[in-house]
Amino acid sequence: MPDNLQDLARRHLWAPYTQMHDYRQRDPLLIERAAGIKLYDHQGRGYFDAISSWWCILHGHGHPTIKTSIHAQLERLEQVLLAGVIHEPAVRLASALVDLTPANLTRVFYSDNGSCACEIAVKMSLQYWQQSGQPQRNQLAAVERGYHGDTIGTMSLGGVPEFHQAFANLRFASHRIPSPYCYRCPQGCSAGSCRLECLTPLAELLAREGERIAAFILEPLIQAAGGMIIYPPAYLAGAARLCKQHGVHLILDEVATGFGRTGTMFAMEQAGVSPDVLCLSKGLTGGFLPLAATLTTEEVYNAFYGDYRDNRTFFHGHTFTGNPLGCAAALGSLQVFTEEQTMAGLPEKIERLRLGLERFRELPWVGDLRQLGMIGVLELVKDRQSKEPFTLADRVGWPIYLAGLKEGLLLRPLGNVIYLWLPLSVTLEEIDEILARMWKVLADPANINGWSGR
Ligand SMILES: *Cc1c(COP(=O)(O)O)cnc(C)c1O
Image 1 (cartoon, rainbow, N blue to C red):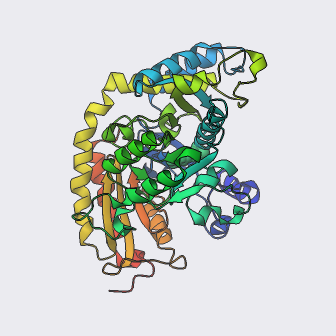
Image 2 (image 1 turned 90 degrees about the vertical axis):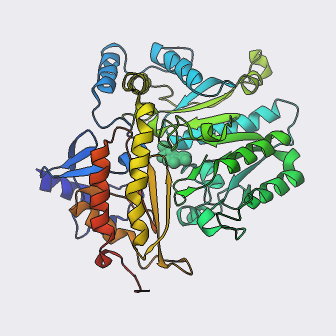
Image 3 (image 1 turned 90 degrees about the horizontal axis):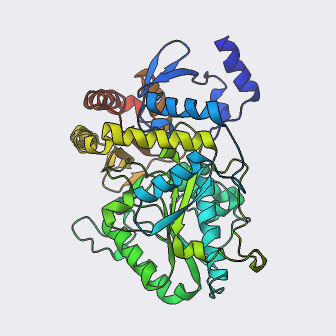
């Protein structure tokens, strides 16, 4: 049967962000079950889920509290539309999310994935200005190497050319500022000399175009899909200040960073910033079910509120908006945060990860080592001095991925960037074990394709 499945997959499945050609000679990894932070394949082999199944698992796979919450909801109501109807999990979750986030965020609009959460944020802002006497605010600003999803709208605001170039003619125009990429600082600064010169392009853009810009969208503290680029909280605080000065909406995309991954419940807390619009997904349900939420302020909400004839309604929605099972999973996940005091346990784990990562600095192909909470990042280079990257042809991540599997470690390198994106429930012993396995993979020059020996 399992052989059958792998053949069937070759014939009929088309996987996301995957070159299916890779499966020509290799069997796709067939996962049958999971427990805690381990995945098990059809032959019973275990793999540490070191990337939280694409950044969403929080409390481990199969957490009983979340399962119970989903089961209980399944017995009552699996799906109903959220237009003209309300249901308990959607209301309770909206209220819980408002309690959890900064005080100015009071309204929750649901969808079912992170791309939609961001697309909705942008549409909300644009329509808000149309209905608030400033229709000239119809432009958008974003950051190079930012990632907000794969719909045409969010691709338009993305800055990862590798992903988006085929659709260049469909993407709408928007303003773009350089990435605050400390290791490859566009201003040429180093840690000691940095005075946040990287905020200047945003300051200049807003000085020039501020009155025509509706919103600026940003991933707080880490540009994840764009290369795990971690930047200082002061940049986020500065960007928020500039937006406020110019009356531009700040949209924070916490789709990846939300729910504890960075060491605080939300990354924005580390900069003391609250946005006009907040996008959540991935960890929202503890990683159990697809669900997303776009939160905004009473002020934005009020611009859509009025008599039906005024045509101020937000005409956006999805069939599965606020799906009851998804909301129940999210409520279960929030219950785990409370019952297990998840956040209180993180500092010790983050420190363990920090200490364990230090030794990777001695590997000559490790150009940069960075960490944000439960996220540990190694940027590999061909040459430390010049920071010359490995090329597409080197495909440096591929042998590392394969060697990881041999060591029972599921990694998913992003180009030259190898990272751990650990579930919050990982134990100290598991962190040590994951790092030991990662060391075996990365310390072996045979796994570093294209290494020049410099
Ligand atoms: C993953 C991600 C998205 C897109 O979410 P999907 O659920 O994959 O559509 C948007 N923004 C950020 C920051 C992400 O990491």
